[in-house]
Length: 345
Length: 261
Image (cartoon, rainbow over all chains, first blue to last red; front, side, top):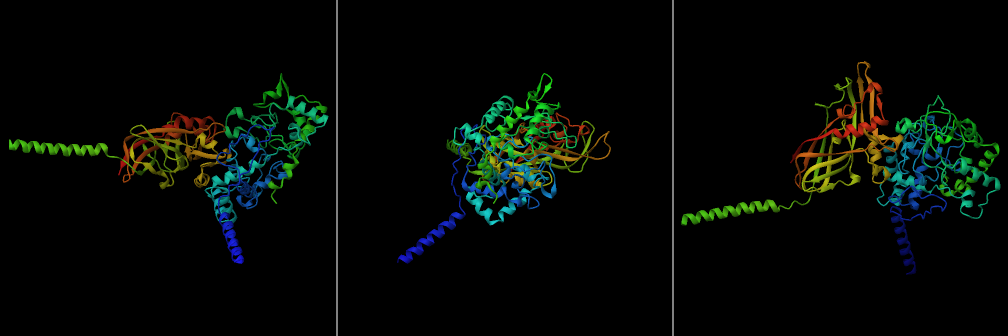
């Protein structure tokens, strides 16, 4: 009798687990906005964050089969330990060794931003993945083939069912899952964050504090809030590289007022995301600050904040630069860079 | 007298019959749901539209088209009493492709039976849909790619694609032109039109009206705003796209007639 009960219970358990394998699993992730952050820009109302949605998004993010060569996944150019940038690459190489003209941006705190890519090609976190997946130089993916691949893959069949109520394998749910993964890529535990939130481990040295004060004076009008961007497009006085002639925001709008403007990037984990600027022309933070103090050139639509009574750039002494760089390094968030939830392997 | 009575009786019966007949008509409760079809028939000015056929524009440029696709979206039908029926947003994005006859006939199921007098629709993808992200898009990205209507560098869709070759006094060899419209940065460029039906469309459980819409592709490039390809034959952004969507595209469409059978 006992034996019978045991077997019956076992059968019940087995049948339960095999049923739920292919059912929607609504296990919400309790996402908290860090107290020093601005409000979320992303309204998740139609895409509630769940364990399975995140897991599916992560699988898609690291799946090279999205690309035409079966190799170049999103994670190929967005590497966790480099704050999801392409370490050391001025430009990234995509499928067929195609080389783009822009430096891969970090993927972090996307849910707090309203403009994506250096030229603002997308302004919604759920839609932005359409660009790199389709771009001929990047992943050169064919969404029809991608969906077919997923429909024929037992793991995707299971995960889409578990992640979404309608369980459909289509581009809508694929984009939503990627958005859930990106939403979770929140960097908010640097030493600076802990300092702002009065948490343990949040001690800044006097030099870093001086650097923060200088930063607020000289940089924070564009690198605003604790996300460190105001989501605008500006010409920051980089000389125009005639071989590339990158028109920036103009490529999206074809309005003269947007020529040579690029998105103000976030500065989080900036120590880890070299090289810098839209074309990766500067290899060090020193080179970046030297640009602002003495390298700004005048070109169409130069940002007014970089031109004062005919003097170009931001006045900075060597001592001030050292202090600002010391401050910028407090934005490195090792918990984020090593968080195993986000890791490929 | 007898004769008169008989006459009166006949008259009364006849009256009753007529009354009852008209009563039937008045109280005929139209119920249930049916299907309505919108047919998009591309023309060029006063000629039928066909690929690789020369058409002369007002600026003297002669075009031969090879590709014509546009997005019809957000369809709303107006009944004779002024009330409206909105096709569910997630089922209301269509790619009308000249190269694919089936795609030019939009079949709208589950329409409440009624007499309809107008249709409103958008051309392109509206701001609300962009703000909703992927939500409600279903297979749209794949469907768009199948007809070359994705616009990856704005993470969105082409609204109108009109391509081919042109010649002019200055350009004597056939040169490719491309007109792509869509969202350009923060300018959404979505437009919508409302068209009156010349006769009512009677949607019934057993009647599927077909609304025959003429879509004049000449209006895209040779309308209120005239596009001169000699100034640049790749129209993919800026004020030209804004002008095409705001000034030209809304004038493309006209309901020619309605079939009720």
